[in-house]
Image 1: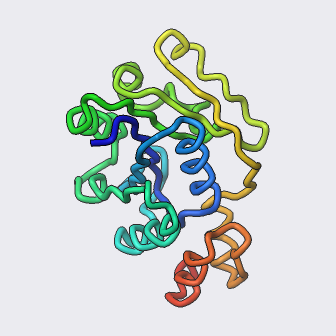
Image 2: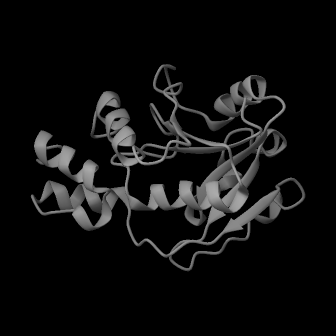
Length: 196
């Protein structure tokens, strides 16, 4: 049973080098035993369904983290109907890993709107947070959460990449290899994913 786990949620449509950098930074800097990568079924702050199927996104996550034996691809949100609320996942993980230190890993862009997450005060009681600084975005949590949140700022080489920009690049038929783990890029090319 791991004594310290990281939780990295997201749509992973597709998983990119920024996701790998965040998971790796948290694992190394916080001394985590495991990072659970949890693809969302339907993310609450994203309009529209993911472009790639759930199975493709799981496969791409497996490829992205193939060299990281401390990563577990966790499909619980894909097996749950409706919106993938982080609080539901946190409650489940708190039961499964009740004695473990649980750390939710997010980017600075997500931290800035964390106060809009469902039941976020309860969430702050179930997990600590680790934020990866990105694009000069502040790593200070919303003021309303300051009394409740336990936050660590991670340092990692800057990775200027987003899934939205990668999907657009791929839709135009251009190479997105610079932003993707090589095996993910190869899989996308072989399956012609994201092309119009």
